[in-house]
Length: 193
Image (cartoon, rainbow, N blue to C red; front, side, top):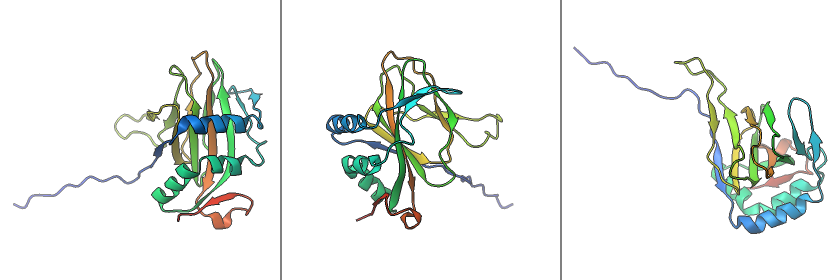
């Protein structure tokens, strides 16, 4: 009798990319100085944090200049050009948090961990389907340290638990589209060289 064959593969895969910033302490000084021109305001409601989202004209270009090496390395890694279409910073004082959200159905989103006290929460990502054995949703924290960047597809839900640290957690987040031809020409487009 002939033996049957069995093969397991994944139907779906959600990639993410982790980047360790080169010369982070120097770039952090430049980024902190840059963000002084873009003050954050407290947001309240179903979540509490401070952000400058929506008031960051000119920040894309300056951020891309400071982070040029990492952004070009990423472009080469994915073998695609991309455009940063929005960027903002978020700070979480003690007890502040952000509820589950995504950024778009299209593109990629990045988080740079500018200030990450040891006892502050990392970003938690939510698996977009139920586990077939337990009928539950998985929550994943990517292991990161201050100075890391995590990039995920923009549709992935994510959140930040309340900051338990007495020190502020601060991130810079941005959205990218992978087809720069459809992006307005005022946006920074990084081309794979």
